[in-house]
Structures are given as structure tokens and as C-alpha cells.
Amino acid sequence: MDQLIQDARSKMRKILDVLRTDLATVRAGRAAPSLVENIVINAYGGTQRLKVMELATITSSDPQSLAITPFDNSIIGEIQKGIFEANVGLNPVIDGQIIRISIPRLSEERRQELIHLMKQKLENGRIMVRQARHEAMADIKKQKDQKTISEDEAGRMEKEVQKLTDELIEDIEGMGKKKEEELLAI
Image (cartoon, rainbow, N blue to C red; front, side):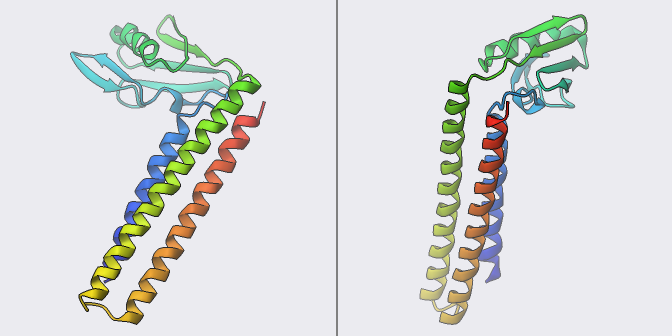
């Protein structure tokens, strides 16, 4: 019956991974490859993500700029166009065989907007974790009602699921504090 707990743990960890990836897209005023790596580029007759090792390497030479070096220079224009069309507020400039992106400093008003957006994403993550907990608790109750597990076993499993939920909510809070510090740093 510990399979129920393993399933709940797996679901909650996936939620945490998705949230971590989602938070990485919130721009913190400094250059990071995560700002552009998931942008979809039309190249070679199809679409691909810019992500490192697919079309280009993405590096951050200083806190205010990114450099994208395509593996194939024939698609440099498509990469630039894809970044423009992604509408992420970045202005890519072709500089020889490299695309350079200057990251503008954030105004205080924009920082507050991004903090608000980040808090919405965190709340959505907490809701998804609580939903996973609810599903796990329902599965435990179902097993208990079918008499496949004892009352004591059900109680132990419910406590374990609740403990797991509390740990993940705490992780989400930690991610939020870290991201807020990044956003407020000048």
C-alpha cells in the first residue's frame, strides 16, 4: 500500500519541477539562459526549442547580457526572428556569428508586477500540491472502505501524505523567497 504514497510523492515532485521551470521564466533583471532556452524557433522545416544542445549555446557573460551562438550559422536569422516573435520583451541583435541580447534593468514598478506574477505562480503550485494530497487521501479512504487496509494503516498513510505535502509547501515557500530576493536585488 505504500505504492499510494510513492505515487503521491512522484506527482508532487513533478509539480515542484514544473513550478521551478515556470519560475525560471520570470525575469529577475539579470541575464540567465532560462529566459530564452524554451523559445520555439522555426528551423529546418519544423519547430525546435532554442534550449542548449538543440540549436545553440546560450551564455551569460555579465548580469546584463546574453550571447547565443548557433551551431549552424544558416539559422541565425530564424533564431533572432523566433526571439522577437516570442514577445518576451527582449531585443536580439546579430553580431557576426553571435546573437547578443541586452537585458534592460527593471524599474521598481516592473519589479512589483513580476513579484505579483511570481506569487500567482507559487499559489498555483500550492493548489496543485494540495490537489495531489486530496487525491492521495481519497485513494487511502477508498482502500480503507474496501477493507484492503486497516484503520491504523490508513491513519499512518494519511499522516505520511500530510507530512509530504507540508514539506513540498515549505519548498515552494523557499523558492518564492529566493525568487523575490532575486527580483528585489538591484
